[in-house]
Length: 308
Image (cartoon, rainbow, N blue to C red; front, side, top):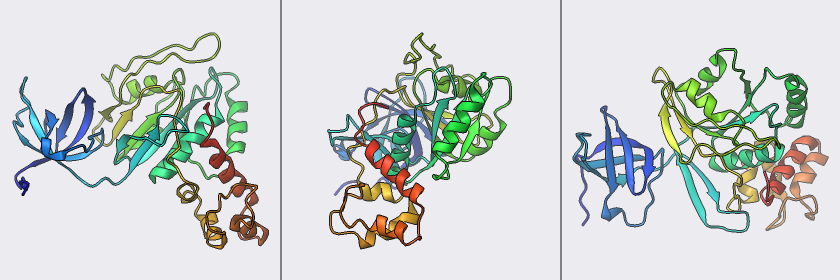
């Protein structure tokens, strides 16, 4: 029988580095831990709630053991690419996915945003669109076009600019474990450094062809200034495989359309060419929006896109 470890200390994982886990204890303090053999092949990721035993002093060279991974409230996953079903958990227990996109230099990429939305809906976490560089000359026009594109998704958003406080964004992050994702060059690391003084996340530059240079190299959980909330800063990424996301899983992000699926034939793909799709019937009956269905199908198609 495995030991119960009734006296294990609780905490959560804020960093992972080559088999060593940095954990913040519920009672205060930070320790370095390793995974106990009894966990078998269970992976430990940032955001995981864990139970630990052993040396919990946090002294240099000390090492605790993670003996239990608590049930996860949410799981943000990706696959290596769109035709590989091997899943990788990025973050556990996140409350919201903050999609960072610049309004100019580089311009917004709707394919990137679409795929982030698919990942958020699949993980059952709230998306938040964070638009940076709102002070640049073409920002107003870019914002108007982008908001029209997502008008039927009821997607919350916040604008940021370097010459104004981040008050609205801070309010939306308060009390949450928030994952920040974004292409390099959109200002994600700059945001993190403003939200978490002392974070010292590397900041890159945008090349002449409008593509950012990757700066962050590993996911890390950082405390929001003031102690009310946590940020997960993720590396800049060029691809985000979504092979693991099913049409039904994505549909959960569209509750106004979901009832139509009950009238679909078995195995319905819900795409525009699907025969007798109940979603089309729902719209035809005036019980759902045609634009909402078009948005769902656009996100559905984005799962197989090779480029964000």
